[in-house]
Amino acid sequence: MTNSKITRLKIIKPVRSGQSTEQVVERVYELIKQEDLKPGDRLPPERELSKQLGISRPSLRAGLGSLISMGVLQSRQGSGTFLVDGPPALDSEPLRLLAQLHGFSFDHMFETRSILEVGAAGLAAERAEGEQLATMSEEIAEMFGSLNDPQQFLVHDVAFHRAVASASGNPTLATLVEMVSTVLYERRRDTIARAHDFNEAVEWHRRIYRAIRARKPEEAREAMREHIMRAQRAFALEERQQASRDQREHKV
Amino acid sequence: MTNSKITRLKIIKPVRSGQSTEQVVERVYELIKQEDLKPGDRLPPERELSKQLGISRPSLRAGLGSLISMGVLQSRQGSGTFLVDGPPALDSEPLRLLAQLHGFSFDHMFETRSILEVGAAGLAAERAEGEQLATMSEEIAEMFGSLNDPQQFLVHDVAFHRAVASASGNPTLATLVEMVSTVLYERRRDTIARAHDFNEAVEWHRRIYRAIRARKPEEAREAMREHIMRAQRAFALEERQQASRDQREHKV
DNA sequence: ACCTCCAGATTGTTATGACCAATTCGAAGA
DNA sequence: TCTTCGAATTGGTCATAACAATCTGGAGGT
Image (cartoon, rainbow over all chains, first blue to last red; front, side):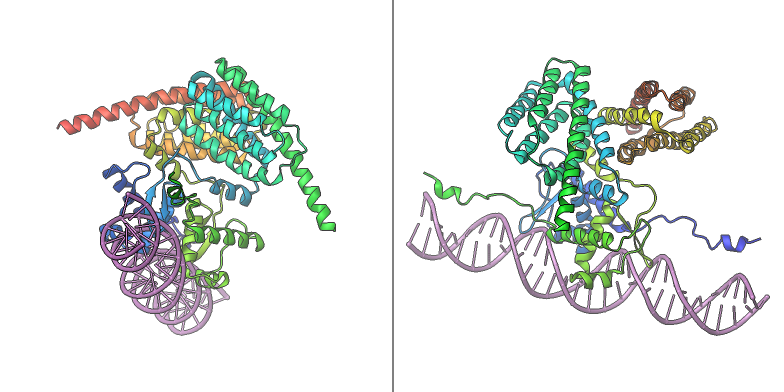
């Protein structure tokens, strides 16, 4: 038998890398809870904090860096390190890199976006408050004013969808919607052309809005589903145009 | 007028923190593309890489640390830094911290999970392949064998849901399902008791499986929706039991 | 010939100290 | 009272060193 070999195999790789870093993350997080720090508050200076935790400054900075890249903290040179304020948000960078590395298709990402936003639209139709309805309506008005400015139109497009997600009353859901939308938005910002008929898009937004305002979840879901499907087609078209444009330039 | 004051106001806070770090992330990512590195491959040693990029080792490590906390890289002391292999995954830690900091309720997280997994179940019914159906079936069998071991049951429960998400054929969606489920799983692992009737849960899993195998998306969606709703109730019950248990201990 | 074991090389991890850059804030001066 | 300037504070970067885990290859035994 080759039992002797078995003993040489690695049992398990517990991935102890960053062992210290994770401990720092945990301890800093406990500090936040103990001191009851709220979004916007400042953490102790690094030099002091490293003494408190009994570790070196680089080790502390590794942990803080991890929390920063998670979007929990934010550093300003000369000022301090703060808990981020504003609405809760997950950094979209990890998703973007993961998608590129593993070759996720944009069709799949649109499909995911559709699932999330259709759900959000349905919930928004049940729970949206007056303030949130007003925000949606304002963004639609802004879209009407941006029919000839694709970049600006896209900004209000995104803002409308963000408002719907927020109106779902579910911050977890809103966070995921934001994360996925951001990845698609950053891509589209570079490829969007002005050859489009934004009138149709704004009309779909109005349908979604009316259904939410009328408290008709199923209509809101259906409108959102249809809208995103059309947006996906428009996106695919833009991608093909961009591709042929690149090809043309390479020929020249 | 107070025009003089206006000039003193900060124009904008460009949040240049980590300016260098983000550059490192970008350059390392370009390196990955240039060298056509695949998951599992090794990066050059830090000492060498820092020379190539013309920066110090600590700065390089800050960037690598960012990529590690994003889940793109993985370091093993004495061995090297590698691109993570295995299925694509987003770290659930950021979501967990964000939820705790902003006080996201578990009800909202269950609601989000339901939206994601109902969608995944519907897609799985359309696209699941034989291999994936087999995996689901095996996990259900394992559940039958774990009816008296809550911890073990939970493991196979999670594995089943992971298999459904994978069978959706949408890696983006599967990644989000995994992220949300992990947060809920880590919480439930601590509170699950054995007072439960797992027979009902395993029966719902079988319904979901049968619907997917029969290629009936709507049935699969409905079964998944109902299953998660019941799981949410069971979870809430466990939380209350845990809370009263804690209270009792504090009295003593 | 094959396996085992050990020592050196490789590589990530942590620590120390110093200096730079941006910000803040109060005191001096108009 | 307001402006201005400089010192103190604080995060950002760097250089160096020592440490720990891992890998590699050869010596020695079976």
